[in-house]
Length: 65
Image (cartoon, rainbow, N blue to C red; front, side, top):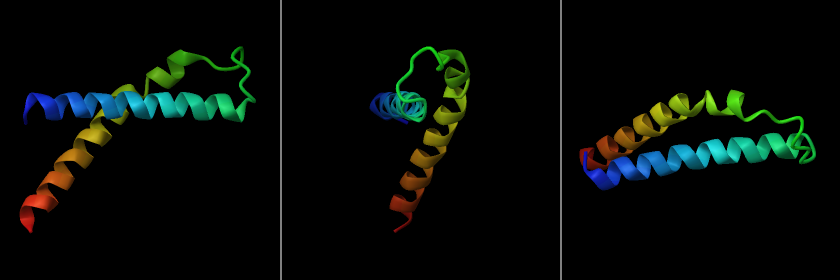
C-alpha cells in the first residue's frame, strides 16, 4: 500500500463520519443540543475498517481482470 492510498482511506473514513453527523443533525432538525459527538466518533474505527476492506476488495477485483 502506498502512502497516498492510506491518506485516501483516512479521508474517506473522515468523510463517512462527517456524513453520519450531518444525517444525525438532519434527523433532529439541526438542533445541536440533541447531538452528542462522542457516540458518533466511536464509530470511526469501524468506518476505517470498512473503507479499508472496500479499498482492498476493489483493488483485488481490478487486478483480477
